[in-house]
Amino acid sequence: MAKNNKDTLNKKSNSPVEDLEKFENSPVIDESIVESIEPVAEDALSETKSKKKNKKEKPAKKASMKTLFKTIAPVKWLVIIGVVLAIFSTVLSIVGPRILNEMMEVLASPNFSLERVNTIGLFLVAIFLVAMFLSYFEGFLMSKVSTTITKNLRTSISKKINKLPLKYYDKTSFGDIISRVTNDVDTVGRGLNGSITSLISSITMIIAIPIIMLTISWELTLIALVEIPLSFGIVLLIVKFNQKFYTAQQKSLGELNGHIEEIYSAHNVVKAFNGEERASVTFNKLNTTLKNSARKAQFTSSLMHPIINTIGNIIYVVICLAGAWIAMKNNNPLFITSIITFLTYIRMFNQPISQIGMLAGNLQMMSAASERVFKFIEEDEEPDESHKTAQIKDVKGKVQFKNVDFGYTPDKQIIHKFNFTAMPGQKIAIVGPTGAGKTTMVNLLMRFYEIDGGEILIDGVPTKDMNRSYLRSLFGMVLQDTWLFEGTIKENIAFGNPNATDEEIVNACKMANVDHFIRTEPQGYNMVMKEDSAISQGQKQLFTIARAMVQNSPMLILDEATSSVDTRTEMLIQTAMDRLMKGRTSFVIAHRLSTIKNADQIIVMKDGSIVETGNHQTLMEKGGFYKELYNSQFENGEEF
Image 1 (cartoon, rainbow, N blue to C red):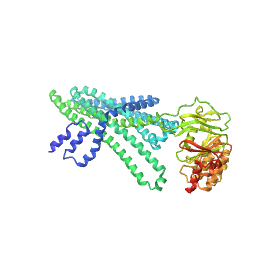
Image 2 (cartoon, one colour):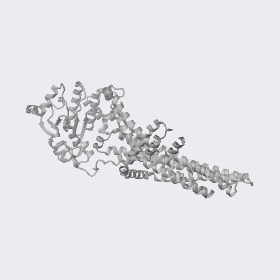
Image 3 (cartoon, one colour):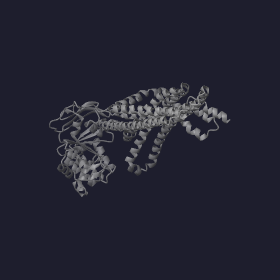
C-alpha cells in the first residue's frame, strides 16, 4: 500500500488540481493537509478556466516593465558597470575550482612539487580576493541604483499627486495611494537591488560552467546538461501560473492599507459609534484576502526550489556513477580528482538554476508592484495650461454663470442650464437640501471639475481661458474641514501667501479674533501645530480665516465654515468672516441662518437647478421653497 501511495505521489501530473486529487486518494496524507491545499488547487482551476482573460493583461505587464527599464535610463551606466563587475566576479569564482583541480592533480601525482602547489595556492587566493572586491563594488553600485530609482519614483508620484484632477481622489482611497508610494515602490527598489546582477550572475554561471566542465569530461557534461531543460521548464511553468497571485497580493495590500488609513484617521468616530467590531470584521476580511493571495503566490513559488534540488541531486548521483565507470574504463586513477571537481561544478550549477527560480518570484512581485506604480504615474493629468495667459488687470469680482451644465458622469447630469450673476462686492449665499449641487457650484467655479456646457466668467473673462493656478489665486477659501499641517502657527497662516510679513500675519490674526489665543501660548506664533493638536474646532476655523485674510484674494468662498462650532465661537467666526468679506465678492454655503440672513442674494437650489433667488426678506415673503426650508429648522429644533 505504501509503495502504491508513493508511486501515486511521484507520478508526474499536469496541474495542482490533479495533484490535489492524488493527495486526497492517498491514505498516508493527513486530511488537514488536503484541506489546506484544496483552496489553492481550486483557485488554480479557476485561473486555468480564465486563461483567455489573463492573456489580455500581459501587454500591460510588458508595458510596465518596459517603462521600468526607461526609468533606469538615468543610471544606466551604473547598471552596466555593475553588470560587468558581476560577470567578472562570477567568472573568477567559476575558474577557482578548475585551478583547484590542477592543484589536486599535482598533489596526487608521483612527481609531487611543493613549489608548484604553493604557486597555485597563491594564485587561487588572489583570484578569490579579486572576485570578492568585484562583488563588493557591484553590490555598492546596485544599491546606489536601487535607492536612486526609488527616490525618482517617489518624486514622480509626489509630483503626480499635485497634477491629478480632483475626480481621481473621489474614486481612489488615500491608503491605496500611500501603499503605492511606500510598499510598491519599496518592492521595486528591493527587486532592482538584488535581482538584476543576481540574474546576470546566474546566466553567466549557466553559460560558463558547462564550458569548463567540457574541459574535464564531455561525457559527464552531456549528462549534466540534461538538468537545464528540465529545471527551466518547471520554472517557466510555475512563473506563468503564479503571476496572477502576485498581482492580486499587491492589490490586496493596497486595499488593506486603504482600510487602515480610513479607520485610524477617523478613530474617534469609530469609537463613538461602537464600530470597532465592524471595522475588525472588514479588516479580517481584507487581511484574509491578502493572506490567501500571498499564500498562493508563496506556495507555488516554494515548489521550485525542492523540485530543482531534487533534479540536481539525481544528476549528482548519475555523475558519480558515470564518473566511476569512465575511470575504470580508462584505467585512470587520477580521474578521481576530475570527478571531485566535476561534482563541485554540479553543485555550483544547481545554484544559479535554483536562484533563477527564486528570482522569478521576486521579479514577478516587482512586475506587479511596478505595474501599480506606473499605472498611477500614467493616470490622466489636468491638461497643461501654460499657454493660457488670460488675466484680469483690475479684478472687480463680477461672476457670471451662463447656461452651465455639469455631471460627475456623462450619464448623470446634476446641474442643468444654471444661470446666475454675482455683482462685485456682493455676499452670495447658496442654500438647498443635501445633494442640491451647492458644493458642486464651488468646484466648478474653482475648476476642480470642468463644465460640460455653457461658461463661467469673471469680470467678463471666461474661466476656461485662465490658467488654473491664476484662477484659484483669485479666491480665498474657508472650508468646513479645517486643515493644519505640521508647522508653526506662522507657517500655517502664511500657507496661501508664503511672502507675507510678520506684521501682515499678526494683523490678519487680530482681524480673525485669534491673536489673543496665540499670545497665550508659550511660543506664540512659533508654536508648532499639527492636524491633531489640542486646539478646538472653532480656533482651527479662526486660523483658516486668518489664512484667507493673509492670502488677500479679491473673492471668497466659505463652505459651511460655522457648521461645527458653538454659538459664542460662531459669533467670533461670523465677526471675523464679516471683516474678511468686506469689499469682496463672497460665496457662502451655509446651513445656519446667522451666515445667510444678511446676504445680498440667496440662491436656492434644488436638484441641480436654481428654484429661487433674492434676499432673505424677499424669499420669505414669496412663501416658496426657501420659506419651507427656513421653517423646517424650527420644526426640527435646529438652525438651517
